[in-house]
Image 1 (cartoon, helix red, strand yellow):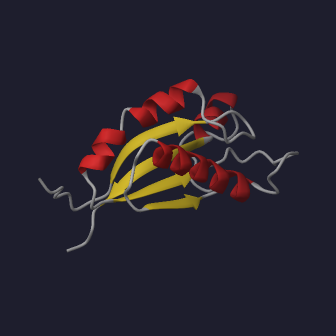
Image 2: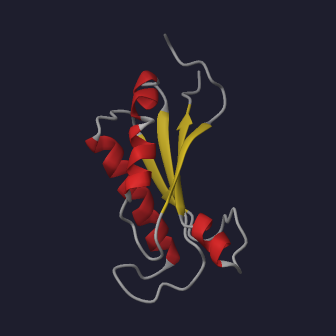
Image 3: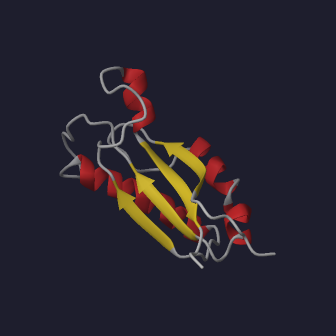
Amino acid sequence: KKWRATRPQRVARVHFASGRTGLNAAAKKALDDIVAQINERGDATVVVAGHADGNPVLSGSYRSNWDLSQARAESVAKYLKQKGVSNNIETVGHGHTRPIGPTNTKAGRDINRRASVTLRPVRP
């Protein structure tokens, strides 16, 4: 049965610790839960978008929030591939340009450090 959606559909959102790209247990579970759903839609492109909280990157392997957000997206994509997702996967880092929470509170910054997984249907 072919997937007939005409609009992109977000299927997961995972969160990260400050300055980190590693997946915690909750993130891995969320991604494990969508692997079958993604594989059922083999013709869809998987788009993984990484995000950062806007605080300056102080140290580590990343020079900027752009680099950090891209690395988060790539971390999720790598995990999905390891779990058997064979769809085309695209990654993009948005830095801190698309917050979903306030950037001036800890709670807001916590939810802004994320990656989202979206299925984009093939255009006919």
